[in-house]
Amino acid sequence: MAQVLAIVLTAGLDAVLVAVELALETGPPGKVSVEHVVNVLGRLNAQPAPPTAATHMKATTPPLADTARYDSLRADSTTTDVVDATTEGAGHEA
Image: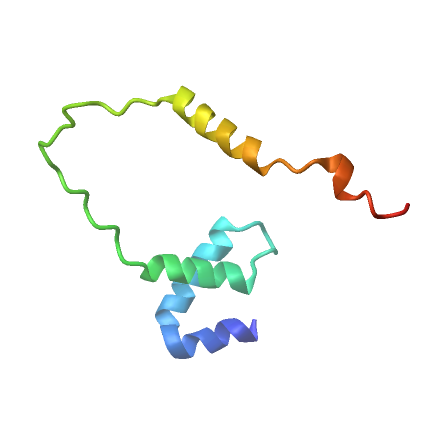
């Protein structure tokens, strides 16, 4: 727990105390680690997520999945990259 005390220098005593209390409340009894306290402290100091931009724009043409095109592309690449396994190790003895 000396590592938790070392965090006080950078984060402040009040913030570390709150983080330790929250970690003790949420964690399993007797199993609270320094990493858990640091994680809770990071969540407390995290900046809030920016609000999403509301817009009235809509897609005129909905995106369509063309799986046949993807299969044809994959089939083309596998036929050119195939190595004959029977001749690959022909010069090696077992």
